[in-house]
Amino acid sequence: MDGQKEHHDFSVCREGGYQQAIEGIREAIKRGFRVTTNTTLFDGADPKSVRGFFDEMMELGVEGMMLSPGYSYEKAPDQKHFLGRARTRRLFRAILANRKKSWQFNQSKLFLEFLMGKRNYACTPWGMPTYNVFGWQKPCYLLQDGYADTFQELMESVEWKNYGTESGNPKCANCMVHSGYEASAVDHTFSGLGGLWATIKAGLTTTYRDPDALDMLDEPVKPVHAFNPLVQIEAGKTQMEETRA
Image 1 (cartoon, helix red, strand yellow):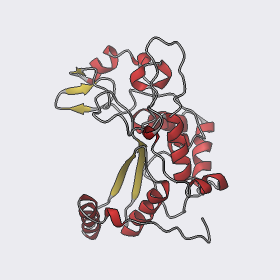
Image 2 (spheres, rainbow, N blue to C red; image 1 turned 180 degrees about the vertical axis):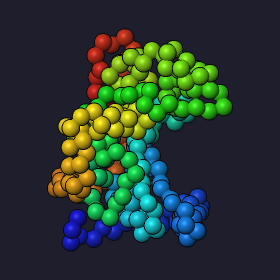
Image 3 (cartoon, rainbow, N blue to C red; image 1 turned 30 degrees about the vertical axis):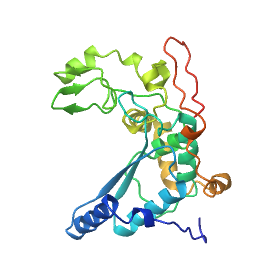
Image 4 (cartoon, rainbow, N blue to C red; image 1 turned 90 degrees about the vertical axis):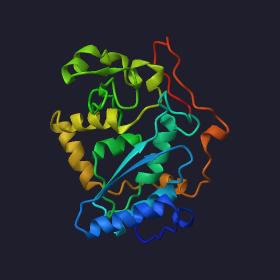
């Protein structure tokens, strides 16, 4: 985006909770706290506005940003606004290609490439286990298949092969969330010289120039649920089918 200026309309966000969050961030930074953000994106997100949000966070002095696509987990009351895997890759390609050097992300560079469709990873469902007042949640914080009292019980009692998009489990059909896939990206980084070099290269190649992705920023935002319901993998099928949404 060198030599180009992006314009964004944040007028709709200047009231209510968003403005309070901005004021809280500004005050925290003023008092010397290290501040990071965590953003989950859903169907209908405007990539141009998201990029403008990145600019604003950097101008405020936020140390780093985290990103993840929304995932249609079973217990969610609103199933219409989640992204399928193909839509996720398209959205994050538009957002993260042609990126500005000023943007700082507080997460695995290879996971961001995975979201853009540049890498394929299998889920590591045990990569970020969740502990709360009920115990260790099986298998991850988005699915509620019970709880274990101890970490050892969690590791030994869960049939891990039954989770992850690659398993064919319909509950995992559209997931590309950081809790399962960023763990895989981090494991790739430290698994050998290939992964380490890929991470170093991703740190050096920060712009990801992509003219087609640049054109996507001017496309009208069309939430998929308005014309094409989210497709789930049907239980019992032996092969994973790519969601068309």
